[in-house]
Image (cartoon, rainbow, N blue to C red; front, side, top):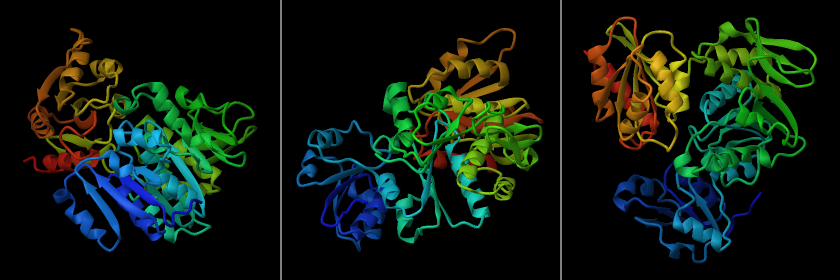
Length: 457
């Protein structure tokens, strides 16, 4: 565990992660410089909340002079590593890290780390509920909820920590959790990582530093995740729809049960009827959570208790209301075309799909093909509207023409959907793009969508 007493630490980004880390490191005796590109007037509440700490604030830009006499640099997750001050820090051999690494190094208990291009929030939440149902004290956070470093003083040896880890966080990490899950790897965040190789390398760091006594959880139905099966350092437990081959350990679906194969025989864990979540992708999330829970010694009864009371995470295929004879769903978390495709496949009803936002330099061709087969009305909004429209227009046919409408923003997209909705339809917000053209994050986008849908008369 690193000692911070007397170290001069630069933290870049005064959002949740930066604030939590500043509080922890200051308590460890570090001298904190907290830097944010926003102006001081937009961070008044933050500075007031941290006024009891001796923090040097630098607002409005990231001057290279900040690196003078700095021992450590900690960028928050949303801060691009191409920022000149971070590049300069690397040139000067100043160590880079983040709050997730600090927590992992300091945690006295077993840590589960979960990453993937899709499903990591639902899987993390499920594992947390399963662990809690077993009577264990469990801490859930990381890329969702609280940065776990803010809870570190209360974490005990016998507890369990469950962390969602993004590629942004993993990019800088140099240790791995004792139980590390890589769910899947599909194109995402190429606006930041640029290439799939760089993105895959970031994800794979969740496994890279494991010890022989550790456990890796891999999605065996996903080629991107399963490609690492031969390079793990400890034991491997997989998850997928079909039974694993002889000699492998993994969860699968057997008749009407979620089951686990120990390499030679199977054991039923809990019935599929316990699962309230919609969609095949959520079945995979449950299978992943069961594999992770099994590796952590959680009983089948506790797994079932965690699953059967879980109807989903906010903004993930979240039912909002019935209006106009249709069911309206909020899947604002879908910030890549692959996630929108998974949402589309979760429904058999006629679909009005609201899609758009800001593109992440991702391909839309497969999305367009699926839309041409499954969506009845497509409403496109936001910065990515033209790119999405061109992809869909290229696959339009006379055999199954779909209506396509473009709107400047999400509110007008909701109004447009309300004008064409029919009984028996599903209206689905599953944007496929990020929220940053109009909102602070996907959660704010989902909250406004809920509000506008609830206001429909």
